[in-house]
Length: 261
Image (cartoon, rainbow, N blue to C red):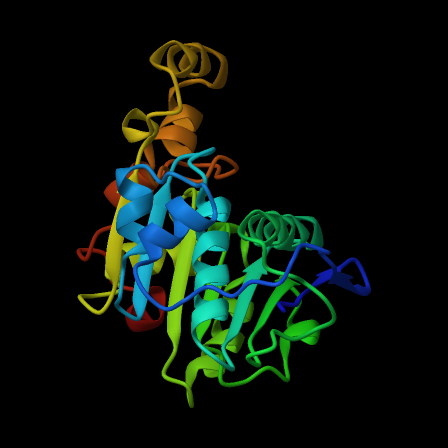
């Protein structure tokens, strides 16, 4: 028996599936994905699913399937690790609800019954919107997933890190870039060796045709196309001046006004 819950709007929604009981056995997650869930990961999805470290950053194109891939990992961990707590944070309730929907669909395919709020082994999977008031109170998470991290406020990211303090759990941060700002960009550029980095541009996603990408390049323009599909951290679209222009204007030869007085 498995159970998943998700905050959607102001309501905690239970997700119920009436499939026959069935529990995943601990083992190879790729075998679980292919044989139990009938999901065939592409090479980069397989790399992420198989990741065994505690910190991973995924900088990926739109429509790569990051929510689907993390749903596979969440279900596998919950079913094979008793008393797990897996939390997915997304920018809004709709996105966290979509994550739970994917988990529910996979549970149905695997023949895992979903009912109530807990796995029968004590595990939980929780989807939450990016609202600090709603996420406080969770602790000892075994896996925290931050989806569309470039759109999650820095303050909220800092507030979820203590979830892992006691459990020494894993933190997965996934997003398409949104300019050179925020914790996602900072971790990607300056997070250090503790983070595994996986970059997945659209040119490496076998499900996105080259003809579509060329059409998008023309429709989106070069700047947005490079951000949305090629995983590049460009300057902020709403900035008055480009980053390069601002950096070029800086000099150490001019003394600050308070020193000149």
